[in-house]
Amino acid sequence: MKNLISEVKPRSPAFRAGIRKGDRLLMVDGKKIQDVLDYMYYAYGDDSVFTVEHQDGTREDFEIKKDFGQDAGIDFETYLMDNARSCANNCVFCFVDQLPNGMRDTLYFKDDDVRLSFLTGSYITLTNMSEREIQRIIDLRISPINVSIHTMNKSLRCLMLGNRRAGEGIDIVRRLAENDIEMNCQIVCCPEINDGEELKYTMRELSALYPSVNSVSVIPVGLTKFREGLYPLKAFTPEHAAETLDIIVGFGEECYEKYGTRIFFASDEFFLKAGRNIPDEEYYEEYPQLENGVGLIRLMISEFSAALDECEDEAKGTPFSMATGVASGYMLSELLKMAHERHPKIDGRVYAIKNDFFGHSIDVAGLITGKDLIAQLRGRELGKRLYITNRMLKDGENVFLDDITTDDVERELGVPVIPISGGGDALLSVMMD
Image (cartoon, rainbow, N blue to C red; front, side):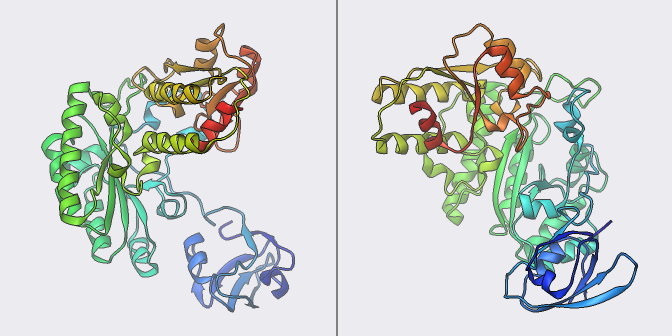
């Protein structure tokens, strides 16, 4: 049930007022509460009146005495206080559509919910929003939000998103910009569709919306081997990746001269596909698009180097191994080499795992499966433990994308499997043991 209260914390303002588990929140100070965004906006002031509906259907007002910003002490049955809104598009590049059958159900859910964009940083397309929701973003100053743009060409956006209303999203972006709502945007770049002149047009149009459009990441399309019956997309060749990279970097330099920021950032994957060196820290400014794979490698190198310079400990010398994707294999090997030169006792090996499950064009560590780890590491020299990035696992669990668990991998390979979270300092820490 929408807005159903699942718990009222003991001694909290709501508990002291008399609200209990099983009640349903209807209004705060006479304002109707539709979901978590309404609740966060209206219920985090100071003293308020909460209108609830009891399980017997009766309604009652409760005076909540609390300080400004203090939580009332209520938990709801669902995080959003509503169902998550699924995607209404049929994007030609959708990664979910490229998953094989038989994986866990949650992997096939496509969310496209503005509330999650604000609260968790997910990207939305703006194709399933009502007028009320658009106006609420403006009225409540819900900012920043993350928007999947892909192109500013309306007809092309309809094609790419497989939605005849997708072009309207561009009008919404302009409207949000006019009302000073900050947006971080992304472009999934597909060869011969929204690259070249189309990419230049999109970047020009978005740059004109600065500073509301705060940053834009450009990411090469990812293609698995499970594309039968899907739109015929092409992968980036090294030459085409280099040409596209020159466009992104060149236009970013123009923006830097004009606005003091590049606005547009190419993902690490573009540099790797083009065979180019990862830029220095200066390129990434304050890493505004880190979660989109923009600057992850440079940040890791910088943190690792700083931690290495400050490290006064002595390595224990316990032999270990590290498994990663092909894209980051060379970088990780170089960091291990740097650490070994300073601390010769460090005894480690890096294994770059080819993605047989999804196809070799998928080369990031986060999409490595348990089966590929087992198949490619069985019989290899692994030392006393195997380190992996926690990005390979489901959040908070020890399960890979193919439902193989770390326990399964440990049993097959005969070594403990230890996920690493954090940056370069955490990486050096496990190397030093």
